[in-house]
Length: 154
Picture 1 (cartoon, helix red, strand yellow):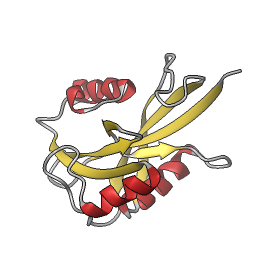
Picture 2 (cartoon, helix red, strand yellow; picture 1 turned 90 degrees about the vertical axis):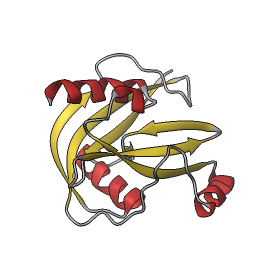
Picture 3 (cartoon, rainbow, N blue to C red; picture 1 turned 90 degrees about the horizontal axis):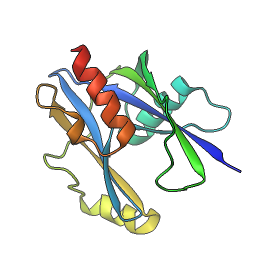
């Protein structure tokens, strides 16, 4: 029997036209991805994204246009019996972005490292200038496709 994992991600650019990415350490692996996360039972995809940005970045966002939904088979990296379906939207911040941004990938502070020791998961955020941003900045195959689509549109 197989199961589906639904993930919802937001493409957020700041006022200086930087795209926001999340650097995560999960169970010993490092990933750079768009902010977002897993859909919870009883939740709509847009509601999920609003919740994820509030939880991860303490940021209220407005979910705008749908950008992409996975249209091919993608096996979960964490559970081989699960298929991943990822949904991407553009989002805009409804308030100033106040979280600290790191300059380099995977620069976790002591608090984030302590969280990792407890939960085997932590994250930090970076800004990448849109002109310099490319699919190679991201780790996940679906994110790379979305990044390429976005770059082709701009």
